[in-house]
Amino acid sequence: MTDATDDILVIGGGMAGGAMAALLADTGLHIRVLDGAPEPAAPEGAPERRVSAINEASHWLLQSAGAWQRLHAERVCAYTDMAVRDGDGTGEVDFHAHEAGAEQLGWILENAALVRALYESCAERERIQWETDVRVTALVREGESWRVELADGSVRRARLLIGADGANSRVREAAGIPAPVRDSGHHALVATLNTANPHGHCARQVFLDQGPVALLPLFGDGQQCSLVWSAPPTEVERLAALDDDTFARELTTATGGWLGRVEPASARAHFPIRELHASDYSRPGLALIGDAAHVVHPLAGQGINLGLLDAGVLAEEIERA
Image 1 (cartoon, rainbow, N blue to C red):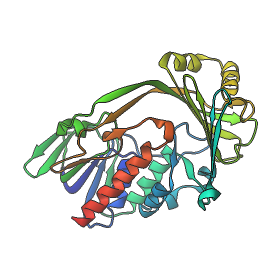
Image 2 (image 1 turned 180 degrees about the vertical axis):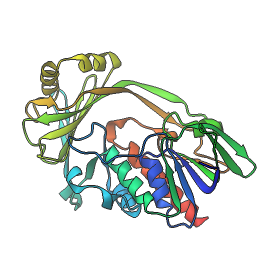
Image 3 (image 1 turned 90 degrees about the vertical axis):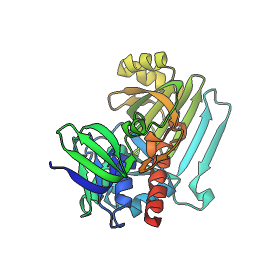
Image 4 (image 1 turned 120 degrees about the horizontal axis):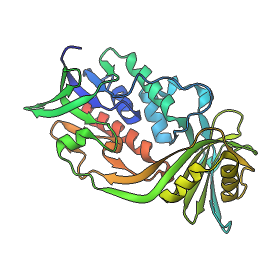
């Protein structure tokens, strides 16, 4: 592709970056998203392992971005209750949507489904270009604009560069913004589970001595959940290496049989949990959003909600300017 000049370049086409572009669609500015991943595909079949808990504020923001309407309703699970237990069974706290006069506390949806919905929303906007499978090789500040060089030799330029490129943000690095990383001492084990008992649209969490176990309700027949099990690295590696039957027994015991016997319905994956906070979110002609600005523990499910609100606030500031 030939060189191009835009008003705004968004580096990173994940959930925060996609929302950022979609929310700017009606500003009259020309927006370009540069993403290293292939064109996002709509998930099909069994639920994806990576899911997010979307709160009410994010729900309305995604509606404004034109993405919520494009999600397939049958692949989104609203949860109306939340229950938290101690691992030894000595305490439990329950939250109910009706107590707050709401229909639900939030929604569990697949990350891939949301990215696809944002991509579709942007694709319908004449002033948004979303490039996939691109590799950024250099980011250079030139006068009042940014120069972004790509691996194919082409160049993109823009007055404003938005870093939505995750925890290892090249945009943040190019701006020279420090972002100290703190190792939480935990890894997260994720998988899709089959449960003997229906989840009843309740998000559950059990606090064990080594870390919390979350069982998040998924769409379908009401007997599948998404697992996020946080524990020290050696323990997570041990759990990941177990055969399915042994893993099912250990997880059922760990959760006190809350949903009866739970069995893996997918392969297990695990990753380190690290936290970071950029010392600043902006520089002249540059802003950071989402994980490029801050990474928090997945315990409360707030990571992507914070990232989406970053996009919402920055979009408001850009429109005001």
